[in-house]
Image 1 (cartoon, rainbow, N blue to C red):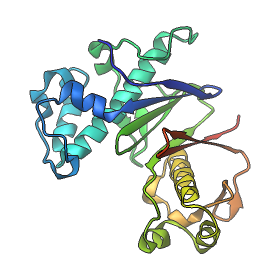
Image 2 (tube, rainbow, N blue to C red):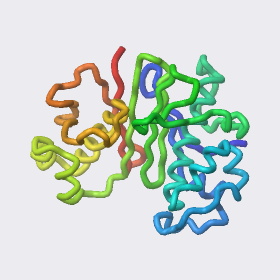
Image 3 (spheres, rainbow, N blue to C red):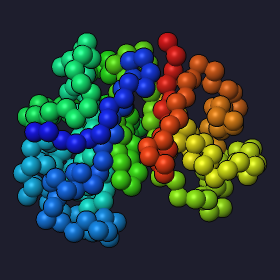
Image 4 (tube, rainbow, N blue to C red):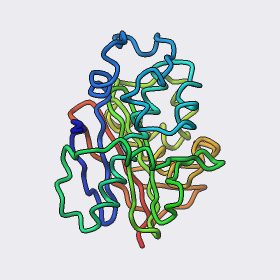
Length: 252
């Protein structure tokens, strides 16, 4: 089948990212569902949708059906499909000679690609230790990131730009130094700093188990427990005009 997934980008040596348009998944596989308000929709039995269940094994289907909201189900599905599609391309075309746009995908191939989670919550591809992966989603998009170099770890985060965040969020997410810096900047910088912070936490494979204020983003530089992370590289870009993503990875 041919699936309109947008572009796959090589964003750094040995690091590739795929962008999934969630409304495309809804139109292609859930046209019988009311998708006008995903947040308010209860979960559905994905096993009833054979076209989607063909991409996942029974353990995955149980996981999907265990989520209480349709929104969370779609986020999980789109993130895993992103990694499965991207890995399938990179694994079957090591020379990267094929087109990286709108690849043809085979559900049977994708079902055999098992995306699992470590105890920390960090995702990984089963039996593929040389690949490092990261997943993020926000509103209409999901992104999947794969490093094909076993010595390069990477994390990614995607956020929709929605204006200034409330003080409660700021006080939880940022240190006093960060807030003082962000108060002097345009609102967009808040999303740049936040995506870098989340991407770095995913790079560490700790997620939100780590204290958010131990990671400080100042002038797009990362400080962890007070020390600047000079071996870390940062890529920040946009999807359209209202989404920002950041990728964090280590230099070899």
